[in-house]
Length: 335
Image 1 (cartoon, rainbow, N blue to C red):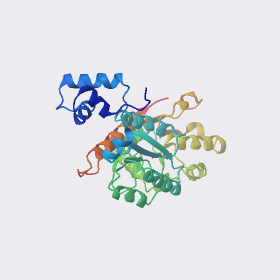
Image 2 (cartoon, rainbow, N blue to C red):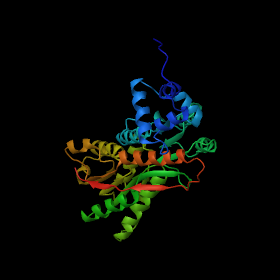
Image 3 (cartoon, one colour):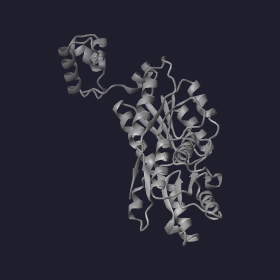
Image 4 (tube, rainbow, N blue to C red):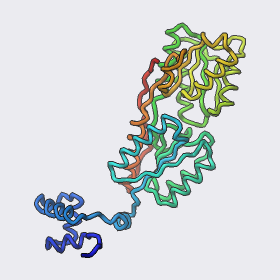
């Protein structure tokens, strides 16, 4: 007996129908009757037919592979977002290539080049903290490969992005602080060239204005999210003549550094300072002094929706898509 794999031609010959009819039946084409479909599928199963993926890719000019680039899998948010993205890709019969830029622009550019060489059909990306130039992504898009951002996007760039509604989350955080009696409310933000940093700041600013609290520029810090930078930011705030009593933070990982610095260097003030970050890290529930709250995001759903948007762009290459900005709500999470 031959070990040659079964082909569409073999099925067509056995059933005495055309190759195109078999192909349409296997692809659930609406013009093929139910009886014919059943006969084709039954014989395909009996003969252990497996589609020739290479032939399909050549015919459709697709590799059925998507790329996703994230800062690091060590970040809980991105790990869960990748799971959501893989779910939607798997349902559409796509494979996924995962790359970590490790917060390096150079590494990100290398990953984009490698994925381009591997002929991915589309890319989902959360840019590195160093990425203030996206020529490598524009080049990818010009070559016909759609790009969707998630969580992080450069300011004033015309690309689709799926992220958290960090603006309203920030106003909610400020409202909670004021309800607790705080008026010296500081903010440690992320890199200013990210749209998500801008939106967090606007939410913080408008939250203060809604509660008739004057904006004090001394209470606003920016960090590149590295531990040394985070420590420097909290030191500057705590060394003010009138330091803050509450601090909104760009994300929970930054809050870990802030709590560590306060505990070591400002032990007397630490018990009286309340904190809110983004991410709702479960580990905070085990702390003796947990933060006041955290803004819980929806990373799995963000990965899903970004994946669905990317697939829509891939499946309709001749259609012009206006950039879509999709924001999923956050909820205040108390530990």
